[in-house]
Length: 193
Image 1 (cartoon, helix red, strand yellow):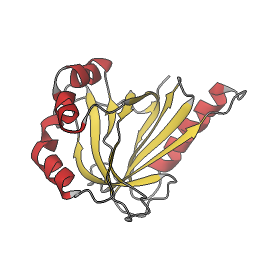
Image 2 (image 1 turned 45 degrees about the horizontal axis):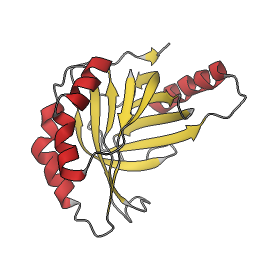
Image 3 (image 1 turned 90 degrees about the vertical axis):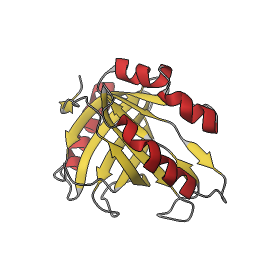
């Protein structure tokens, strides 16, 4: 599993209805993308759910690198780059994935938490803790799924979870989900190593 996200931070007075209309118009195009586990179309709006900014920030879980690369180099990503400029794309290697009790339910909100991996810690212990946190989040009422991944260039963990409701029991940035593309790649459950 591979995680990927880019963020488009928009002006404070930006009409976010433009993003909503864009997702309504083209979001379904990735619903069957080969190698995609899922794409959550996320939009934070300034002043809502504690967000300080307007931000479009899709989050992806890929089952294959080939699917991710086909998206990035094969033209699908080019449309976004043409419309908004090419954003920096963050990538993380998978650590863990679990379906939640709400799997199959409509994912209404996402929580993303990034945390640095401290220097000098035992990496196996940190990753085992991330697996445990993924399992805990997935077992929480209202969770649709939970995942953890690590960026080894920055030594940063990302915890990502989807929820049926707007009061998840998870720390991090809260994003309403505009659309969820399920993709065609089955994400492997459990520890990813």
